Length: 282
Image (cartoon, rainbow, N blue to C red):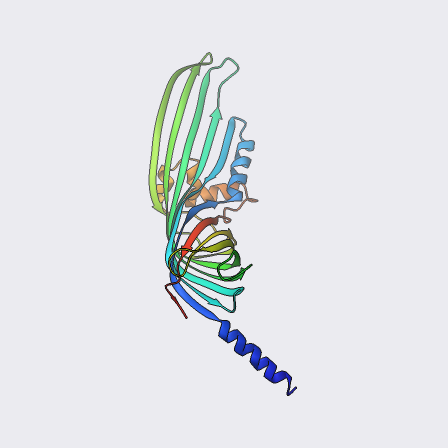
């Protein structure tokens, strides 16, 4: 035991000598999406329940994501480190819904009604990850990161842009077509206040500037599922059968008609490229 204790003390002294703390600015740019599997399932169920509905699909559209903040890293040695940052983030994404109803008879007389909808989702939030970092070769080489991130969500807004088109046919020939735009913006006041994600990343340090510019790519796999809708009565009045699902009345009606698909599983996914530079290190 008397021989082991000095060795343990020597080991920790060696680790302390190798340890390094660094801090500096960090920026990020990438793409983000909001999506719900149950939203797609709901639309598919509605289409199957109405024989005149020929198409009712949902597509998630990635949008711009950006972040600006400060990072801190504590390196135990050349290989292992822990990494965190505090960032302000913003994103814009969209969910598109297309609905087509065909009421033509066997002679080609009747209407074809379509609704082309876009639900633009805009939000901002603060985030803080806690990541483990492993460098394969040296402190300037290729590395991987993994860990968890907590997002403290700010206000989330929805911008509903929809066009209803009614096409009238006589003997399979288009005789008249009318369009009706419906646009409305509202605060999505029912949504998650915090969202967590699992983060996986890959990066390296480029030999730029005095201390090297760190570049990495991170994917934020969403863990939080939550409802997302507005209680705005004006939104419910203006939105069509596509985007009304993001309003209180439309959500309640959809869940009543399709009780197996609760609309409480909206997730936020992010793929980002980050740049950071250690302004200070000991």
